[in-house]
Amino acid sequence: MSKKIIAIVPAAGVGQRALDVSNEGAAVPKQYRLLKGKPMLRWSVEALLADPRVEQVRVVVAVDDPRAQAVLDGLARVVVRPVGGPTRAETVSAGLADAALDNDAWVLVHDAARPGLPLSSLNRLIDICLYEQQGGLLALPVADTVKKAHKAAAFAPAEGCVLTGTAGKPATRYAVAETLSRESLWLAQTPQMFPAGLLCKALLQAHRAGVEITDEASAMERYGVEPRLIPGDPRNFKVTWPSDFDLMEKWL
Image (cartoon, rainbow, N blue to C red; front, side, top):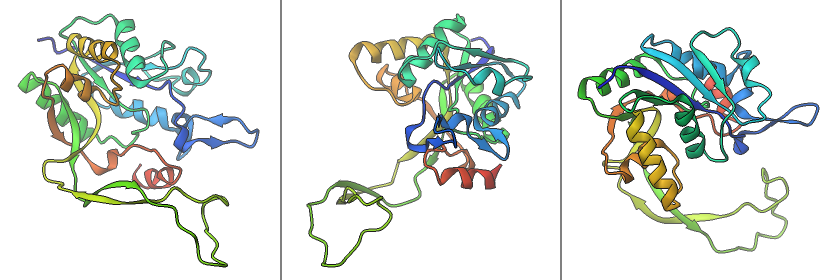
C-alpha cells in the first residue's frame, strides 16, 4: 500500500454552539476565532504540518467562504478548496473527490476545531496505521461515570425562586435514566486515518442509506471495517462551547 499521506480538514461549518458575535454583529464561525492571536483553523493546520510525512493539507471550506485563504496565507503544503457541503460527511466526500487520490493513498481527516493536537499523537497514529496497514483514529478511554438521560417532568418552582443563567427562560430539564458501564467506551478524536478508496466507498454507502455520519470511523464501521483505536491526548479536545476557548488557550 502507498505511503502517500494527505490531510483533509473539513471547515465548511459554522459551529453554532460556539458562535462569537463581533461588534459589527456578524457571526464569526468558530474556526476563525482567535486563540492567542491566531485563528483556530491555522493552529489546527499547523499541527498537521508538523509531521513532514503529511504531503499536503487540503482545507475544504464552503463555496462562499471569504476568510480561509487569508487565514492560511504563507503556509507551505496547504491548499484551500471551496467545495464544502452542508454536512461534515458531504464536505469530506467532496474533498476526497476533489483531491483525485489513488485508492491506496492514506487520508487523515482532522477537525478544524482541534487545534491542540500534539505532534506525538499525530506521529503515533501515522506510525501504527502504516505499520499495521490498517485504518484507525486517535481516541481516549472514558474515565468519567456515564449517565444516560431523559427529559424530566415539568415542575413548579417555589414561590419567589428565580432561575439564573438561563437568559430568563426555563432550561430543559433532564434526569438520569440509567448509568452506563464505561468499560470498553472510548471518546473518538481526530485525526482519523484511512485509505482513500475505502473511505470514499464507506461515505458513499452511508449517504445512499440516509445514515447520518458524524465521523469517518463510523462510516468505516458500517462498511465492515474495524478501525484501530490509538491512544490520543486530552489536549486534543474539540472546541465546542464558548468556555472551551479559554481552556484551549491554556494548553497552546
